[in-house]
Every structure is written in C-alpha cells, then in structure tokens.
Image (cartoon, rainbow, N blue to C red; front, side, top):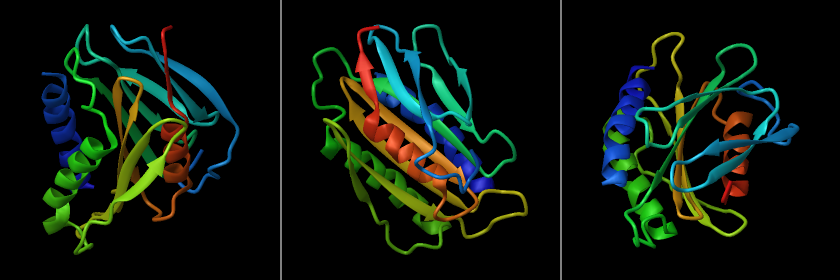
Length: 191
C-alpha cells in the first residue's frame, strides 16, 4: 500500500536520526522463541517471537541498532518492522510512557488526512516493567495486493525505545496481537 510504504520509509529515514541525535491471522499464543539482537553500546534486546515467523535484520550503519523485519512463514499477510533507538547519554526519560505516547500521537495526526479514521485512538499497553502505546489506522485508498491496515506501537525497554510498524491485511490480525505481546515481554540484557 503506497501510503504505508511511504510512511515506513519516512519513519526509517526521519525517526532514527531524530531519536539518535505465522500468517496475518496467526494465533497470538503461538509457540515463541527468544531471539537476541545486539544493540551497540546497549547490550542485547531480547524478543519472544513466534517460531514460524521469518526474521531478517538490516543494519543501516556500523554503530546503529539493527532494524528487524518479520514476515509469515508463507504468504504476505503481514510485515512487522521493529526499530530500536537510544537517547543521549544521561537522557533518562526519552523513552518514558509519556514521550512514547506523544511521539505516536504526532505520527498518527499526520496520517489522519489519508486514513478512514477521523480520530486517532491510542491504546496503552503495559509490559513487565514498562508502558507503551499503539494505534491502528486504515488506508483510504488501497490498491490490490497492498496492506489496508497499519498498527504503530512503541514502548520503552530498559534504556531503549522500541518502535514497531505492523502492516496487515486483516483488521484483527494475529500478527498485531503477537507483536504487541513481543513488545510487552521485551527485555534488555547486558549480553
């Protein structure tokens, strides 16, 4: 879907520098496995991901965190992109629940002219020791084969900000539930 591709590229290009200076109907309680992603100067991000999801990572620059991309084992029912960032040294509250909510509100407000929703509905998600937010938006103009829905989520994990973009074809996609669960359970460890 054009809007989501443009928005994903925009967020990848704009959000990282700004912060740094199954199937689509898969069951959310599918068996998971812990996958570890090294975050330069910040240890390891641990994510409990559904076993059936294919994962690949992209590293934009040498000392930057990887971008994780998850897809179903077969088909194209969803795509989950997870980006990680860290604040400036000593900036303790950059990934607070309030800042995450504010960031997502700004992103959602920019989408309003191009989505069917007339009002942004942010929902809270509570993790083991952190709180985040998320929203789902429906594209007004979907071409065949493109994703109709996008769910955007963010949560603080240790001293990291973890942001997810879930593109999906089914509104109540199991991929959304599984990704939100993955974010709630995310952990940062020394290594």
